[in-house]
Image 1: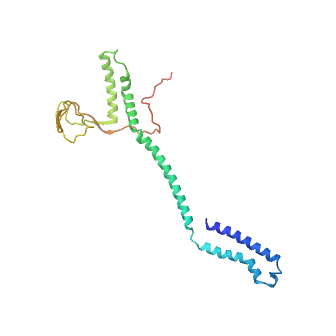
Image 2: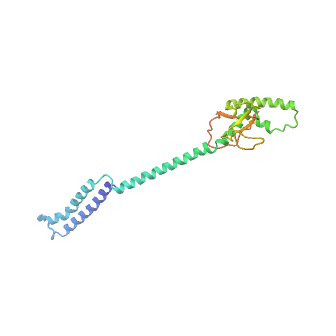
Length: 229
């Protein structure tokens, strides 16, 4: 409880006591004759307020906050900090949910969307090409290849994993990375291995996808197009 509150409540209590003693003295002037300046009567009337003054001086001399007040203030501050921390944690969790749980899915959607937009790749792959002859398919593939290649060059910087070209002999060291090199053929014994490169592999050194600004994950690779007549 704050000092101002203590002083106000105590003043009311002491004032009531002082008023009560004054009323008693007034009713019993035969015992406490005020007109004769009897010190006992004046002491009864003024004593409570004098006591309050001493009490007020003592309270005023106390530190600004008692230990209990400091404890309560500290608990309030800790509670407020916990609430703020919890709100920030929820906000961070939401941002992480958007930025960390969805990036692979979002990257796939974005990249396929670019390949569809520039080269109609998904349209081509979803098309049943059995009824068409090779010449028709070849013409369609040329257009798909041109658009998809441009999209990849704008989005990814691709480099082969193995510098040597296909058909060259290479030695695979003991500490090779299985995620980068897949061994095929007649595999036996322990590395190092010697083999023929059948595919140099691909890796990207730069990814230039647009920044994902939506707060909802999406399954839309390419929107439907409707021409209004």
